[in-house]
Image 1 (spheres, rainbow, N blue to C red):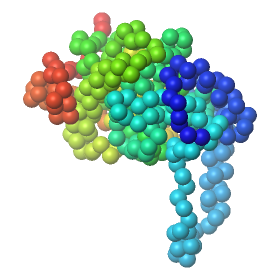
Image 2 (tube, rainbow, N blue to C red):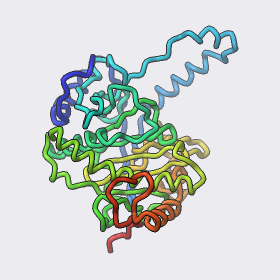
Image 3 (cartoon, rainbow, N blue to C red):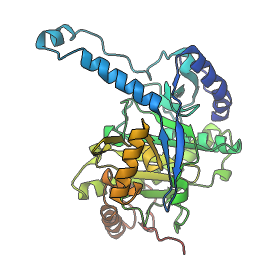
Image 4 (cartoon, rainbow, N blue to C red):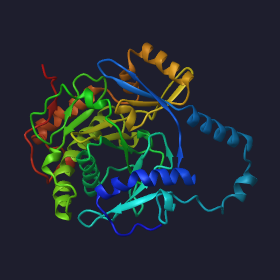
Length: 372
């Protein structure tokens, strides 16, 4: 299946339910049953438990262990075995290919693929038809089409959240660039309700989370048509690119101040109203009886465990750590490094950091204060 005849996000979303059911019935898509429970509090969370996923991963690990250790002779015999092709490289599995959308301002087209292993119905991916690295941020055009999907979903009264795992340290399992989408109203939406944004399009730091969590307000969705024309998408890309770059400037400076670098990874979450960016110090939280992989959805307030025992271990760890947000903090970086970066940029650049030289100058960035 080749990515031809681009359509608009509304058409893709309309075709998504039937495509998901067809792929599931064909066996090309594996859907794992799960249950979700809510952990209330100042920062509510959703904990999803999927024993079927855990059993699948355990079986795969047992199979690998049964192969036994490989000596030099075995390894030499496998040198000429061709590398497994990426699922994101055309031609695609026909039942997993939903359609394509046009590249923006000269960029390559992007394909919409169903996630082969799904915990949430209609989980889909937006990826370029040519290989690009997942360790770098989305391009302006990819960011614009991502927002276009969120706008299209909102016109159907459908909640959609987009997320991007920046490199292995951010939870990326594939090297080919891809934005992911699921139907959800993530708990992080409630985490930012008390925040104020004095300057449009400029990032602030969440004032009470125990780790650096940068939030930028996005342009009002009702200001954009759906579907969007090519010109609309170019204008949207020009609007969104500085928003992301300002946030990334703070993230990379904060990582440097914390003694790390951008290779540690970061998470990007986009809702209809906000863009969230979180730099990482570790891809997983580990404690006795539990190793919890955390990607962007974790920082959206949605955590995954693979058994009731893991769920109990997570509850115990949260109690010891003083809450689930402190587990997230163990895999992120302290908020103070972001505050230092914000202050330095506001002082030296009038609010514009090195990564957005040549873009519009701003009036400053600051730590958000909660609304009283």
